[in-house]
Image (cartoon, rainbow, N blue to C red; front, side, top):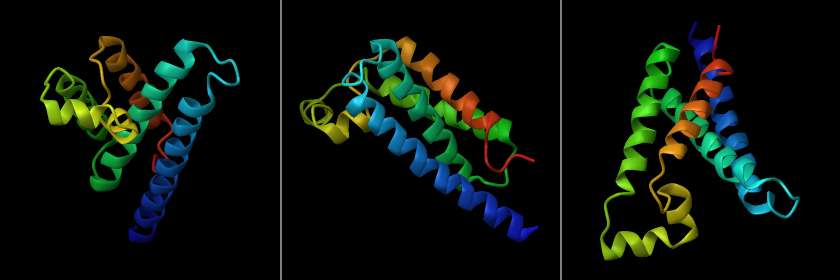
Length: 130
């Protein structure tokens, strides 16, 4: 049983790296290969939501997938709501690449929907599902 859990966690970690790589590639190259704005913008947000699910699953690996998904959605919504909070230092960080990728710049309800889609997809295709 422990070996199966370790394998599941390894697969989730590998999936995190794949999702991050695909998300960065989408944001960096999406427009260059003429992908539509909606695909680049909200595809990246959906992948970010999937990444959050996978990271939560790494920490709470033995929890039911539905619980992991709810926790991931709570985190994603919290980060999106945090975009409504502004200080000069925080806004300066948001203008950096790291700040934009981690925190984002502008609040959007559409992002929350994209996160939910990404979380649902990650939950459905969770490498640790039985």
